[in-house]
Length: 596
Image (cartoon, rainbow, N blue to C red; front, side, top):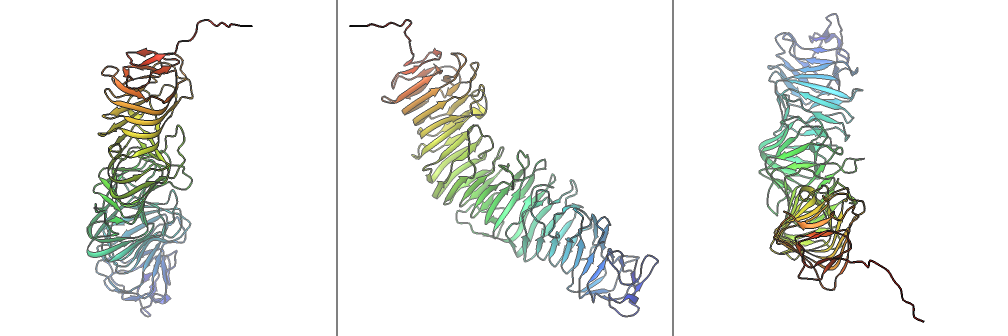
């Protein structure tokens, strides 16, 4: 390997300056090393330099100065060959040239406590390798732009629980693909500290599993479009944190989710203000935020250690080719100030989504009967001085929707609800044009029950039931009932046994004004019984208004009082302790009379 001796002049590109040691001589190439030791004099990189390994710490280490008039590219053009950069603590560095490493299978970066003042690239020059393992020895400080990635599909794994302090810009040059990632190593997670007046950019959203900490007191960090965090490659303990500094956001930031990956944490101190801007002196306010899914049926989640704020658009965005993926936010509050678009769903989300501005809410998917991949399980609170307008049907799946203040416009649309709570809508006089009550379980709890809480009954124009399957049930809990114009229960499959029931809360009043349809295809008369939730008195009050039509087949009643309205007639069904319910009586014989 060539050793720098500078016997002819101080120029890197002069062959006679490099001492041969038996494994190579002349100016280093991508297949030979460049070695500096305690006997090496000053060096000027007068041409674009290349080498396989760049070592400034041979012997007792380089103590003179390298002048980076040009850059040096480190790494073999043979992808399988390992490469390394080793700095020396006392070495001097002049000039503005960069060090760029090829995206070889294995890279080792050793700082020995020396800061690098210029741009530095980690795996930033493409080779044929699709994996790149980067091992860090000691903390690194980069004062120029830190670029990670070569613009090609490569999976990076960072090894070493060290800090990379980035005082210049941070640029991720990794394209979007399901497997493209900077992976963290469990128990040895690398942290990038964004510390200067700088810009963080990314050419596309990809998976980021290492720690990122914005800790830039007195400075401003600009986060650009398509920057991202999370997804494939996160390890237990991975986190994205704001510690200090003003942050300005633009474009869309992506929090990513992936199958079979550990949960991660973000702590960004988003503003709760309804007039929040994209500049935050004490945290991060996202311009737009996308929860970007990777695959269907994933289990990964993101835990919020502090609130997040979205100034403009919030969305769940399924990865290309994925019909609807899962994105779960856990804990704390997301303050959402404009539009919400759901093209994915949440199954265990616990973060409260507070809708506190003026904007639209839509779910970009055709919600069909029996569908399970839809909606939000997060608590949703509408508390605004503006207007929230539905522009499609939206789903509430094992979550809650609470209205507190503002205008909520549902014209032409409505809700699809599974096992959730609806609160505050009735007392606000909000009418749901269509509510699909979708069931997922047998019995009268869990995915079968909608809980209504308020001081005034919930008003619904069309109440439609779906999700019929074997012995699934429907139920209503809470302290208030509903007032429905059209009640439509059209069972489409045979149900056996008595477990498929319809539950109402004890002592609560439910009213149907125009049309009551309850058609159940039952194997026996004890199926599809409308009863109180605890199967005892006091009765539930189910009132069919005078003048309303009714078509009831296969439904019985138990502890139901309908005395305030017209008699309910069932063509089949067991009646027990009901008031103003009757079974039809059919003639036992038929006869005819002829008169001439």
